[in-house]
Length: 293
Image (tube, rainbow, N blue to C red):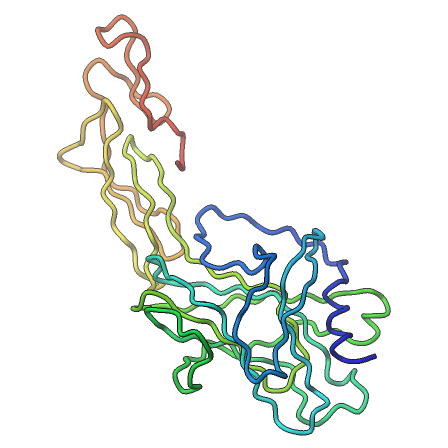
């Protein structure tokens, strides 16, 4: 079977039943699975990465990229660059890749240049470069290897060994960036690319409202955030409300609080009017959320 056709057929095998986690604290900048039209990423040279149609584990149409020039005798150097990704305030960017990769030993007559890895890179820019730039402008993130590679036997048994790898980049200064994938002789298909950053979600703690806060790039850095008292409450002047947003997008170390004003009592994350007072019966705050907003 032609190796390109083999790789295409792998993308249509759907025995892997994966549920996509939904994390509200992840701000998604790019998700290739959400694009049913052509992705239109830049590929160089023309006989390298190829965009094809497929379906995911839920039979939803998706666009993917593949390359499989392992029978070529010459060393491969195939580049694929995404469109421009706006950073949108993100400091620590996560890149999640889903891909399949062919076991070189399972390919009869394969050239000695066959590889089972590919490289993930990026380049920071303030605008869309419009095409693949010079190789020396890219910064390498990592060499990506598969935990599981597929064989001809897996195809016969209709098994798709889908790998998921997450890498991160930080301390970005420009408005956005391009990701790039360098193939040096593998038989690989990029099933999905998802790019996101983490933030601490708006929440109510100790009768204080804390807004959405972007996590910092440095893993050990905590961002101190001052809270605003909910309706009908007042700040404790000796200990104003504060919390810290971690690099993982989690609120930590609550300090201080607000207290209900006269004529109100604390309810569920709010201050409610006490019955019989001039304020009326159980006036509740618009911040009565019981947690994340």
